[in-house]
Image 1 (cartoon, rainbow, N blue to C red):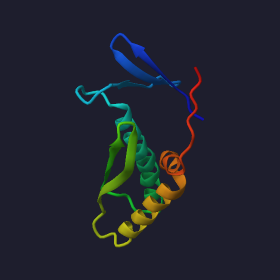
Image 2 (image 1 turned 90 degrees about the vertical axis):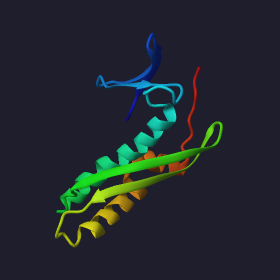
Image 3 (image 1 turned 60 degrees about the vertical axis):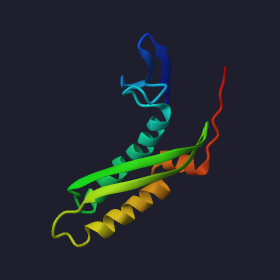
Length: 130
């Protein structure tokens, strides 16, 4: 389903997908590039938001603003603790059902549709081949 190539370049580190997309990766929090942990948090947020938005709109409730903050804290040098997703939503004025629909969709997406969140929750093994 997905393959990404990550490599060291003269400018640092970069991840590329097969469609030509590219993301610079930093090895610390001192530069502007995303760290690998920040990319993981962005993947959780991105996976959720790209599913929540169209599903809420499909049910007739176009949200005025849809954003989120995804937080995780290292609990050990090499281990991230619980990840928290906090939505920042502005509901359409006069739409009494929008909040109920949004909350139901967001919960369903988290529990069933977001591959990234589900993978973290289930603890998928990672194999390294050298």
